[in-house]
Length: 89
Image (cartoon, rainbow, N blue to C red):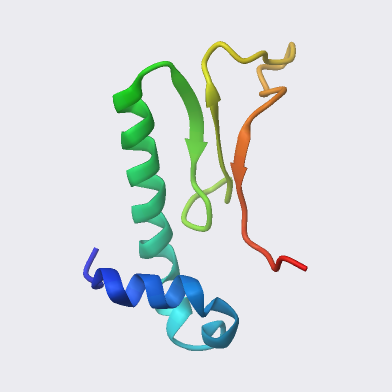
């Protein structure tokens, strides 16, 4: 990623302010880096499964869970952690 840590933190903290301008230019690389870091940390722990594509991937979601947590018959996680984007009221 070609952006400083400080710039990325600023963008995350000020997404509403930056939505129409600067943020769009760094959004995908920033979230690609976040997803990659999360995936590598969980792989290092072992025993986790997930999809890491919030903002930057085809599914536009990052979900993960311990491998031992249950799945339905179709293979979808019944319980998981999920990262999303949106405003908190």
